[in-house]
Image 1: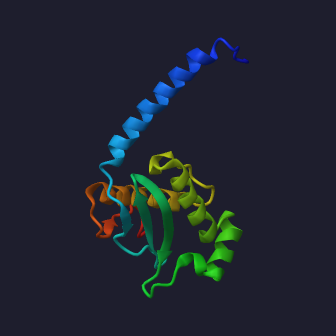
Image 2 (image 1 turned 180 degrees about the vertical axis):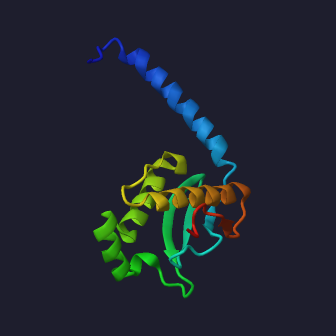
Length: 157
């Protein structure tokens, strides 16, 4: 449908009002979120020896950067493990370096962990990511810069 010249004066003020209303609602919730880095990590290592974590940088109530990954007891990062990547990619069609970036980008774009879809082959990590991202966002709302420890269901199976 193409708008005529007569609909512009009616639609533009309505759209402007809607945009201003939404921005006011967003800024009200943004006032409750502290600026800075907020992190959540799994409370325990999983059965493969990895502990997943999410770190967010918040500014003006928005997520600016997202880091999602896992580390082992020595601090080695999961997405750097080439052997694991090859095995997982052959079995599941994805690997940590891919799905961690995919989930982080989805959170950055959608600004809410509940709006992120699972990537085929990485649904367990999707569940963990959403829990960890939500916990990091709660830390931001509280202004608490300590790392939140999160129980991940099924992690030790």
